[in-house]
View 1 (cartoon, rainbow, N blue to C red):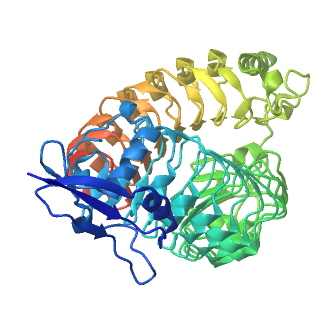
View 2: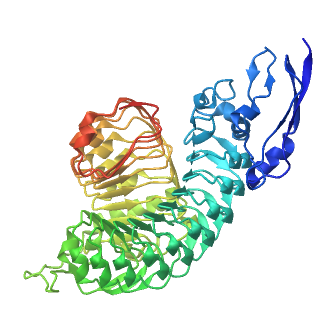
View 3: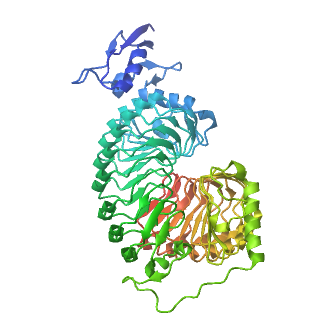
Length: 615
């Protein structure tokens, strides 16, 4: 049987730049037996070329076993991704590089023509660089490479993905600048680049993404001002620029973002005042402005944000009276307002009832909405005994030495004879006892000392964003007055101490993005006052304890991006206040409990990335 030479001729120009390189290099020949000599020419479209051959056009040869094989550009792109990101060591690489259809490859979804539409490879152990060839997946709609160990830069070729509506590259080690070309992704509705090492300014071209509903650029090293062009994103509901090095004022153009529910600008270097036009964002539920250089007074217009649940203004340079109008914010559940601010007057009584907050640390009297002080005078408490103050001081000194205090970014007054309340990040009550310890993003490096468990009046412990290592000391379970515990974004390892279940006053537990392992302690079910729990992005295993269903005040439960197994406990249906439940990217199995239908307050449920869930 004679064999004939077939030649595939591909044009040298392409409509989509992303396909250009592919088309230039893929002029090849293939042998075919029992077929006449023929020539296949990929046809041109109305603009000059069709960069992706149709299935009929790409079936051009038989393999070594005589079977008819299909050349697929999308397959070649996935092969390039596999090799560029250490595919042999992925957590799950089932069927990759096999002869099975692409839809059988782990994390790949295709359309009826076999074109790749979804790449779901979040938290899958990818290492290396994102190959520019991904820009050739012309039908790609969803790209999730979240929480891997990807480095290098973001390929500008991704801007050729004209059908893309979700681009999720957060929680990697990506560096360099954000490509301006991403502003050409006209179909994009979700863009997440948070938790990387990106530098440079925010490209103003992102303001062209008029379908965008979520923009997450937080926890990077971005500089410059917030582009005014972002005010054109009128569909945006979430804008997170937290934990960067942004400067300048908050641009007035953001007043056009009337669909915003979350505006996160905390931990930057923003200056100027808090704009009064923020009160004209009717859907705002979370407003984070803490840890900036904002000055002036708090605008009374914030009292018009009827849906506001989360407000942080702490650690700025604010002054003057706290507007009585803030007492109208009946849905507030979290509010931080102290720390380097210098308020006068009184505190609206309603703010004193916010479950998670720090208004008591201001040392100001309470007053009703008319500005009248309480009818009964509150006697000034006496100074705490010297022995108790010495215990608090010793605990702080232990922390300083255990975490390289001399190398902290700021250690003003630490180890000095100044009052403890004058040490950077320390707040004391009227008796001089330590009630808050706030040292986030301050380059603490070392182990959390067990002595912190002796700060018996401590209500808030915030040590997130440092380089804390080793285990969480079980002695923290002795802090009976603790209401907020945030240790996120460190390098803590070991298991979650079951002793934390003794923190009966705890309202907020935040341990996300560490290296914690083992099971979630069932003892956490004893935290009956807990309103928020975030254990995401760790290495937790085992099942979700059914005892979590006892936490009837819980409003937010975040357990995603772990290695949890087993079924979703039906007891979660008891959490009638739950508004957010995120369990995605685990290894959960079984049927989704019908009891979840009774969660009338639930507005965000995320279960994707659990391939064995049903229902």
